[in-house]
Image (cartoon, rainbow, N blue to C red; front, top):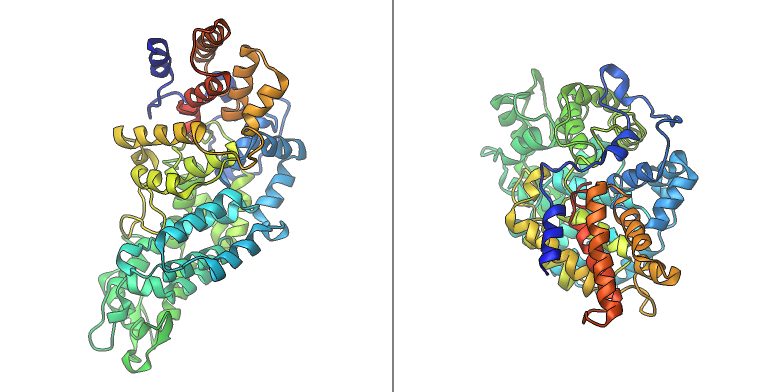
Length: 488
């Protein structure tokens, strides 16, 4: 036991840990300067398309992949991988029809835990991972919480809206979200009426969804609030209440006219400030925690050039030199959702909402319930002494308790080791490659092998009470609590 504790202390996760080994870093480009960071990355003899880059793409543009999925992406090349990720409409997604039947015939869309479980299942089983990743991004961006809306079915409809527009044009999504029933209730536009405008909706659209602070005036908010008067909910749908709409002239951004809510959305959807605000959020979500201003400005140019078409923006982002650079590689902390969904996909376990949903709550990310209008802060805020313990507890439960989807076999990673009858060294090497693409220092790997050698020797001598299969899982657990696995 003391040996295990010592080993865990060596591999323990800290935010300041050096996640990438020298070997891994050497295979990536260094920090970039000038305008080159959004030029397409091209493989070279020194900097090739390899397993590490394939896994990096699948983690960031989705929730990671199994060793088989990573190998397929590597063998087929970057262009093939990007085509299926970004142009997901080309990819068959057979589980969608089954889920629609469950949603409308079996599931209760008025029970929040049902919705959470269904979305979690979608993320873990979808053949269109970027579609679900962008649905999660928009959920955090247009942060709407059921704790105030208190109508889970409306949250379900909003989630569907995000999925349908996941990689579409942002101005069109903004128009649709502004008429979304859950959003109208969340930001109090139900009480925004002629003669007594409620400014909450207009303020948050400017501050948190598009322009960001400093790019509008209080007068702009006041006049825009008048433009959104009468945008209400009747039943479960958007309703334009003409009797409560202010049809008078309004002056917004120095322009005077009989503006309505759609006009306001048009004014800000392709505004340069919106382009920069969204570009920063995309970079923080997909690339690095603190993007440089020059990176933000360059991506904003891409956004404006393609009129807010997210498919085009993501296409540039995911093939760029910046995305595959050393400063981007494993530079993000996995969110609870990324950790949870990625682990389920990797191990090919069942999602088990009774296990995963309480764990997500304790880790700080409850689906359909962002903490406030700003959404989740993300980044290093995901890690503290309480949440780190829960992250590790979740991994332990998934490894030791969660059943494999194929009840007749072990989880694919462990089954492969058993089928090949691997020696301890080969088993450790394989687990390091399968779980973290070998991003572990030589010293840590040696400690891991020494520990496993000792454990296997005890099993063979009859001293240990724990079987070989469980020992494999403990080795996997140690690797998965290391910096490389906890980083994205």
